[in-house]
Image 1 (spheres, helix red, strand yellow):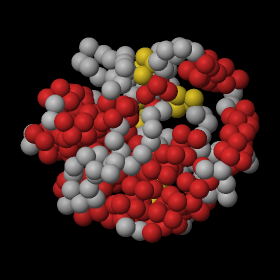
Image 2: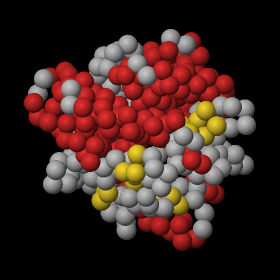
Image 3: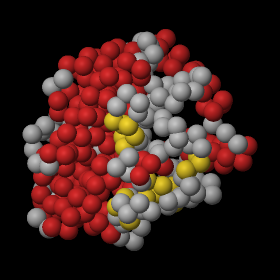
Image 4: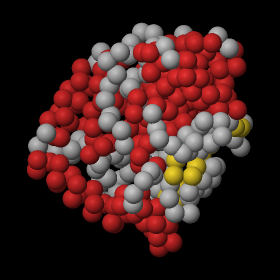
Length: 326
């Protein structure tokens, strides 16, 4: 990483990890788990509970939309992924309690997603991040993400189911269209030389195939199929599951899971949080597809987590990666 980007990165993460009070990590680092109340056959509760995120302590904007505090010069920002997860958590809470306030928070998020669905340079409708982000290379605002696209769709199709207001389904359809185009065409897909279909959380070249973002994005495609019966959505979800099954072994290093497949000499292991998230996500995919490979990897990666040596080796490896590449 360029020296300037490295300094910006450390100015952001040190206050978040070491400082007191809220930061963006306060929102992201919940307890990742599968929602036992979700159904693979109908649009009910979302596939993870997100109940801690539904009770996010703030800050919020004047419309009650959560803001993430990235510290440093980034400060408080709207992040469409966080906003969608906050909405899905409140939808789950509403389904369980019937509380009107939870429904209002969920629909406020759905309305924000409708209002902030923007047209990119390729004429596709996307949710943008309007702040620069230091990844392997800096993502310059505005930048889009398959993860935001998928979870935004998951909110909107549930809002349509709850209200029957056509604006939500119209926006969901516009967002889904970006899943039908490759990243070089302004969309969300990368198709590799083997014909594997990837959903890219961070759109960079060469692609890095972040695992948690891939799985979360795929659920939005699945939800759009459940809501509409769209055959293209069904086929796209099937293609992404084929890709995942063909490549899961590449994310397994024998004692832990990888965060991404970036082709770096030192591989990027998942943090303990993301390793737990991978396990929960694989459990969801087993529920959605009944394919044993997802259950098998979930069990294997769960066994890695229960071993003291593995946890400490993963932490040391991850720290070395960050020092070298970030």
